[in-house]
Length: 54
Image 1 (spheres, rainbow, N blue to C red):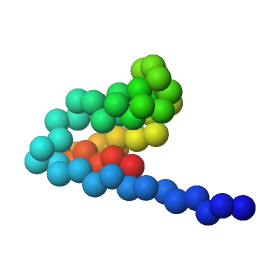
Image 2: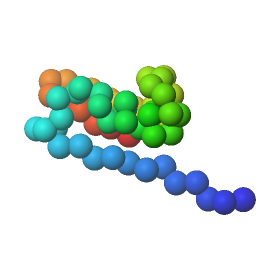
Image 3: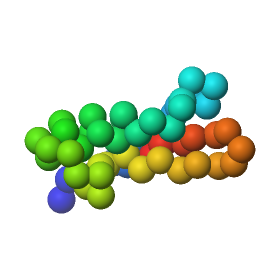
């Protein structure tokens, strides 16, 4: 059975605006259409200004 790896995307909170473009690009690349629930990147907002994608 092949090993599975969980990838981590580290985002600079000073540059991230929370616009969700990374989630849109992810689902378009993998699904061929925009389905927010199917995005493989999930944004976690840690108040007040930290956005962390995983």
